[in-house]
Length: 376
Image 1 (tube, rainbow, N blue to C red):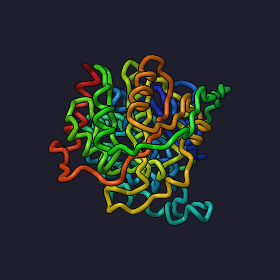
Image 2 (cartoon, rainbow, N blue to C red):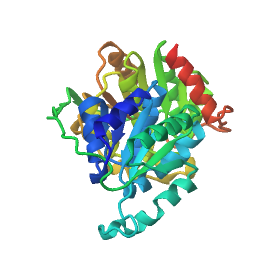
Image 3 (cartoon, helix red, strand yellow):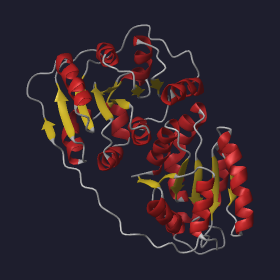
């Protein structure tokens, strides 16, 4: 075994002090260290973990992600469609449950055989974490070199690698919504383009706009291609988790997350995490047109979901049903004056702008431009 505290301190020596993860018995001692001594964000699933880490990286952190190997499957989508094209590195630790030849629960049998093959398939460099601390220090040097070259690196962790690290008493946060406004009159259903144009017109010098994948990002690009924008590709449902990681690490910036109904439905657990950590500088706007507009207009089930109620129950300070663009403008300005984690829900018209283009910059170029803006 290796000393968990010494290992954690070595991670911090290399600048890795932001952790996010999902529990695993093999990694519990490292998780305990992260909770005790570092910034640690507990997420609802592993894909959310990767997206939170991506946001933290944009904010200048060197993030560490922790997960069980069964949960690596949840992380595949953002690892291959977010981290890879945007060149957003993470340092990962994934347990080796179901290691061949070692008795374990039946659900881990197959995953134990294919964990490293999955990492290979995703073009992620990896090593088994050594139990010899002198070798571990060399491994961290190699891992950091990949990270500094914008490449993710994962350690595969076998059973009983880390020495016991007691968990300090944790303070449980409790966020109660201040304002919840449900539908009070008829919706006017503005177009997405009109809505994005208004949102963009209200940005300030320190506003970052994160647009969800598909038509939302493409239409924001046509409204105005700006260095403060991120146009998501792939990783459906991860945009608010990126927003959370960024908001927690860049508290002097306004983080405006622009979400779609189909995307949010895919990862609704993110609302619980956002509401628990409740960054005041994050504004979460849901544009609901009840369709998967980017893939042919198939209906979603959003008409059957009370998003305002769910956001409020998840801990958002303000959760408000918006009926038209006038109300949207008023509520965005209200958030700017009194910042609290806020969820604004607006029904928009189906369809999109004709002859819609796509960003001409590559995703990693968009990322680099945004990092310059954030560091300015």
